[in-house]
Image 1 (cartoon, rainbow, N blue to C red):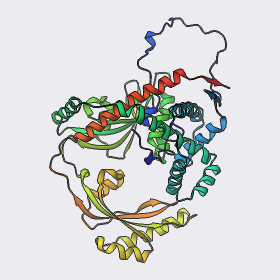
Image 2: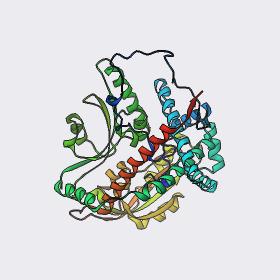
Image 3: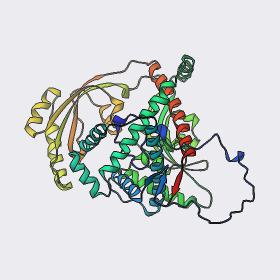
Image 4: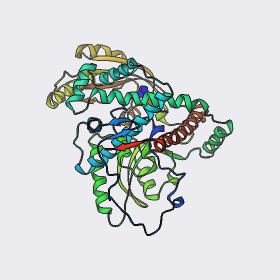
Length: 446
């Protein structure tokens, strides 16, 4: 289940409903259209738009306003570096935001009925953590949100919904869900049989096409790619636009083998490196945008499995630093840190620069961003990465102090396999739980 403590998250997937993955909307595969009594020559009567989207609703007596929706829309803009969304995407986003707000109401109401109360101090603490990620106090963060068209109340309501639903699932579902030894052993056997084969951890945004709309869909895919290259969240865009079932988990395909993919997708993926974005790729029935999250060989040692000891030397930029000034400071910082000769020298040079030093041991290389993995994998002990950072934050380098290489081969992680199977079961039950809440709800659209 999604951990509340990892939230940002909250703004990275804001109004596309960053409730735990288990709560996301899924197609109701248990009720296919072929089981419905729908005639082949359907004729519509009465109002042609009986359920047309309107920006407010009453969900079991509780109101969702147009303001609620617009404030969540503002969180999407914040998540995408305040980039204005294309006009043709806005209506679709509002519809998705509206649906997610309805789900959030249902989740909070169900938790309340189960006498699960969320302490306001817990919500305020989480809000303060989010503010700290922006290097702001809670009051400053509240003003920032308001300046962007959102509000502290909108963020806190989403925090409240996540805590409420997570605790409800923990009590009603997770506590009664188990994984058998046979299930774990079956997965272990499949892994052992596939030892040495390539595995790819991919993200996908799939857009269906027809001969009539292929050009328009391709143009839309190009716009999505541009937004992603400009810093947009892949998971958020996948939730918003992907037409595959994996949209509910941010487009995450998990670990897959090339042989299980469509040939065009497999060919593109095999040539990708972690962190790389590729597309549009033509696949049966549509086109896909691919993100290589990671790659490995089954049960085979990989340099990316190394455990590192690092020192991070960071120079913070003053508020309001311009791009030009940031570039100048970064250049000076790069020149100075280039002379670091091993971790023992990092502290002295940091002191001369007025920079901060943080030491960390037992860092998994795979936990680092792909760009840094690609740098560190070729570095020797004592060497320094090139500077990285952002104009509104500062600039840093990493000094490699130690590297514990993986064994020549690895055994299946039985505990991790069991946890993954448990999460999958919990998520499926949670999806059915939310579906039932929707079916029983009384929703009045204004």
